[in-house]
Structure formats: C-alpha cells, structure tokens
Image (cartoon, rainbow, N blue to C red; front, side, top):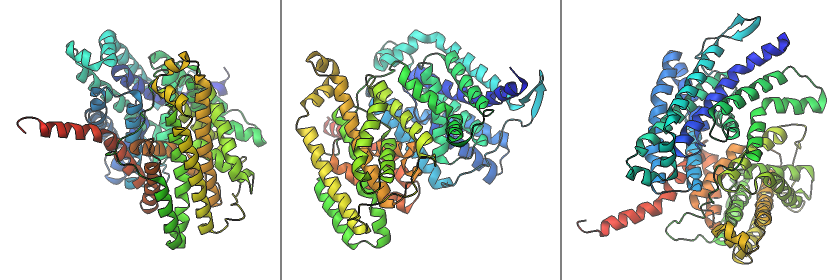
Length: 588
C-alpha cells in the first residue's frame, strides 16, 4: 500500500472504531433481550447534545461531561427504557412489531425533545473529548485518538465475548422470558444489563462521532442509525464480523476520498463516498437472512370509536373557506400527509411493515416536478414501480426485516437522489385548474376522497386473499395463494398512495423540498400511524391534522406528541382492562 493510501486507511480507523462501538451496542442489547434497539441512534444523538450543553452552556470540563453522560445518564436511560417501555411489553409477550413501534416511539420522542430544547439549526461545536493531533508510527501519521478508540473497541468486544459464555441461559431468556423466570434464570437482571450496555455504547458513539460532523437532531440520529448495517451484516450474532464490516466500510470510505472525478460522475462518487454506510445497510438487509418474521400489529383500539373520514374531509373543506391565506397555505399539507399515512393502511391489509414511505412520497414529489402539468397523475405509477423494485429483494422476509430494509431504501433515496441537485427540479407546478391555494385545497380533498373510496373497496371487498395472508402465510401458500405476488401488489399499492401524497405536497409548496421527505420524517409518520392504529382511516386523517398544526406552531412538538402517543396509546386498552378487573375484584 502506498504512503498516501496508508494514510487514508489510517484516517478511516477513527470512524471505523465508532461504527464498531455502535454495532457492538446493538449486538449487546439484541443478544440479551432479543430486541433490535432501533432507538440507539436517537440515544447517541441525545447524549451528544447533552454533552455539548454541559460543556458549552454549563462550562463543565469536557472529560467530566463525557463521563457524566456516558457513565451516569446512559445507564439510567437504559434502565428506564427497560422498566417503562420494553420490559412491560416483553412481559406481555409483545411481538416484534410492537417492539419496533415502541423503539421508534422512543426515537421520535428524543428527537422532538432535542429539537424543542436545542433547536433545529446545524451545529459544528461538539466538544472533542479524545486527544487531538497526530503521531508518527511506521512512517504513517496516526491521529492520537485512534489508539484510544481501538482500545475501547477491543475492551467492548472482549466483554461481549465473556458475557456470551452464558449463551444457553441468555438464549432461554430471549426465547421465552416467562418460562426462563420460572426456571430460576435472572431474566429481568439480564435484560437490564443488556439495555444498560446498549445505551452506554450508543451514548459513547454519539459523543465520539458528533465532533466530526455538522449535525442537527435528525441528521445525527440517522448518521448513527446508518451504522446498524454493520450489526445486520454480522447477522446480529458475530461481534468479530461486526467489527470487520465497520472498519472495512470506514477504510473504504476514506480511500474513496483519494479518487477524483469530474461532472456527474464526480457528484455520484461524492454521494457514495459520503454514504457508504448507507450502502452497507441496504446490501445487508437485502442479502442476509431474516432475523425476525413477526407480522405487523393490525391496529390500536381507542375505546371502539371510529372516526368517519368523510366528515373530517368536510370539516377541512369548510375550514378552508374561512382560513387566513397564511393558514390556508399550511393546510395544503394536511390532505397530502393524510394520503401518506393512509398508505400504512394499505400495507396493514397485507400484514406488512414499511419505514420507507417518506422515500416513496419523495419519488412522487420528484415525478410531479419532472412532468409539469400531469406529474401528479403520473406519481402513483412511479411510486408503485419504485416500491416494487425495493421490495423485491426482501419480499419473502416480511416483518421486522422488511421494515428495516425499507428504511435503508428510503435513506438511499434521500442520499443519492433527493439531495443531489443533478436530479431535483427547480419548481413543481400545480394543475392549471387549481392555481389558487383554495382551489388547490379542494382539489386535494377530492383526490383524498377518491383514494379513501378505493382503499375501502380494497380492504372490505376483494380482500379475502389479503385476510388469509394476515392470518397465516403458511396456510395461504397451502391453498394456492401466490403470497409473494400478493405482497408485492400490496407494497406497490402503498407506494402509489404515498407517492400521490408526496406529489400533492410538492405541488402545494410549488417547490421540491428534500427535507420534507427525509427518512426521519418517515419514522415520524410511521410512529403516528402506529399510535392511532393502522386500520382507521379517520384517525389517520386526524393524525395528519394534528401533526401539521403542531409542527407549524412549535418545532419538535409533533415528534414529542407522536412519541408520547406511540408509547401510551397502544398500552391503553391493556391498562384499562387491568384497572377494570382490579376494580371488580373482591376487596376493592
């Protein structure tokens, strides 16, 4: 290896070490609890912001702030997550879908709190806690922090290997927690240890990574989340493989900085160089076997009430007649977002999960910009096609694996398409008959009404095959239903609806805004749909109304509302039954 290549490779060691710590944290939690901790990115982000606040605002020395956050705040947060969120869910034998919803509920809650407290503006002043500068080793300039980071990776890997010696007991706890407790195994203690280890390593990742970036709450959360690919590539089992993928990807990313191309090829190369961990995450979800196959939770019961969607549409139409121009402009987003949220109902009809609806909405927005005049009508076709392409490699996986794969696909779309000026339109035109805001709002409401009618026909009419898919995929295959084809059709249908919403959104704004379709937005929308239930069109429209109004008034408030709702509303029916049973029991 030439001197220049060697210097670049060594420069990648720091990023590789941080990615390895992140992947090992995911493995630590998954090995002990069986839960894929999708909130680790938000935990790392919050820890980075808290460290920065202690140093910049409270003037605490950097090393002290880092120790307080990593060694005190993170363990307490891990214990709190186990005690208040994931422990009770696992005690009720919740499936992977419920655990996923809870994980992203925690994610959007932490992002919302960080946005409300520290703002949305990008920052570059995170404190550097490890020594700076370089030292000369073997003719190569090595950053002084690298030996420390490598030592941390080695220590964590050895600790995880030592802990794994209790494999059978840990496996028993993951497979059946109640049975393990009856057998005398310390299931709760092991779960607490797994969550503490995972949150500590997530916090350490955020604290070490933030000084290298220009970050805001959503960006830093997603950057840390992208390192999930190293854990999935290691099949959530092998710590050495996770470390190998982390360092290999980071070194490859560093080596690409030495390659220079001109024009469009240079733009593509820059995108790949900046997002190589996204590529790893996407390939890992496409190529590795499924790690869980639980179906999507169908809906959350909120007292048995059903919200009539057409009444809500009529109320929005009446409001549009009296709103001020500035409020009317904001209201244009509501029908568009409602269509994106309704796409989750399409997915639910086939028992599928997707975290990539923001990416498909972005495809619709791009289509509306690329094809002036008729782009809104072409958007559903584009969304269906892209959804089918991204679903094909993982359509047999379903469940949690498919959900993570779709999030990786949305991240790839955002990085390689939406954020590239080469591909984005300068403006998006409305249909000629709906140029004014009021006319456009009524046009959106007509489209929303037609979409709900079509959706109702889908889920109540020729949906017997979909019902069979939800109830038992094996039984559906036995009676001759082409399961993969049906799943692909459902995924394409959901992609068409999300893309239609994205096209209406962009045409309403009359400009393509890449930030509106970032993966973090998709997580927020997924959590909102999960909180109110995937099968109630009226509640999904109401959720769109609340999200738009809340975010328009206070930045981060929609994420806080959704995070709290995601954690509270799904548990409400069980809590109510428990309270009712206790009230009716003797002695009460």
